[in-house]
Length: 220
Image (cartoon, rainbow, N blue to C red; front, top):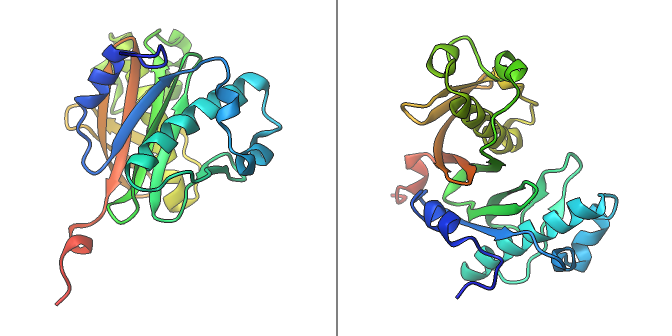
């Protein structure tokens, strides 16, 4: 039985993503989630407004549950200089939240080079954001579909979260090109990311860079 902090329909949709070597969870942001922050984390998050601290606590609660299931119990997730989380040694992950839902994706660094996650409501974006978000190549496929434009927005947020730690370069929306049919995104920094998403009450996107096959071959 749910304790009210999980949306069963959303979790079922998340479970259908089947992202290789990655655990994904969510939490309905609730009163007291700000208390989920560990002592080590509070210092790097204390400057945030209260609602942001509560959402950050909820996201870290989800991430820690996932890490616990992997044998990494009680590890802090600090906030880096530019806001990106600093994951414990051996772990790779990503977190996100909107007003109501916090999400996290966690895997092993030996399995993945990068992961990014983002979640947004399905409310369409203002029409004047269309050209800011889409590349010339993307526009014909989404021009008459506000839902697809919003999906591109969420995808590019997830891709940025995955790509930035690899290249330390800020990416504009036009620096990311998305092929919805193949579920791939490419960046101007030369990265290709695999995309998984679900659309229900929210849009949730996970972008990953898998380890090269050679990294998993046994040594001779």
